Length: 192
Image (cartoon, rainbow, N blue to C red; front, side, top):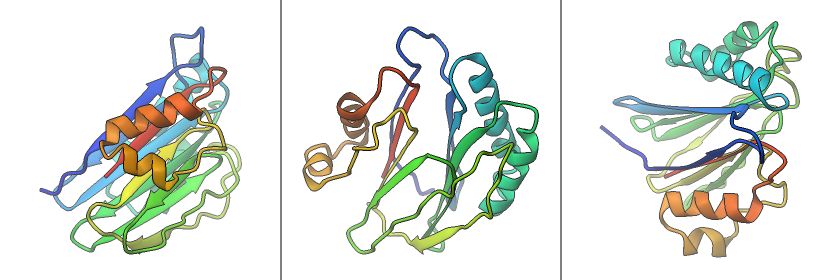
């Protein structure tokens, strides 16, 4: 089985004990699916929306990413709503596929390909945009950083940052330490 390594920093905003962010990593024999969700706002209602999205992804994880996102949109109606991203790495096909809605960030470093997926503006549960899946070639060793808006928009995966921290957990820690906000829930998920 192909296994990726993950580094994760997941923390609620300063002074709170519950995070409105959530993530899921589902590893299969031929694929790995990563989901990152940020419930709108913070606190209990945001956490409930994020967890509803995670439950939906869990039960529909084998579907195409756009179909999973559409199911999550239905599941989140009546909640606060969320922004979210889905990333699937297919080891058998040597591809990655990404779909995102809202201000979830993704940065990819590949030694062989230019990979620049984007999230479409919208809110899962309220205003689902026309979904767009981005598919790229995958090379073992490619580095993926997904993050919620608790990581400053100044975050850039520059050469110095990722070369200094080859370990994925160290890189996640560095990203959160240098770019994390105290006034928002923060999640940085690094995969290689």
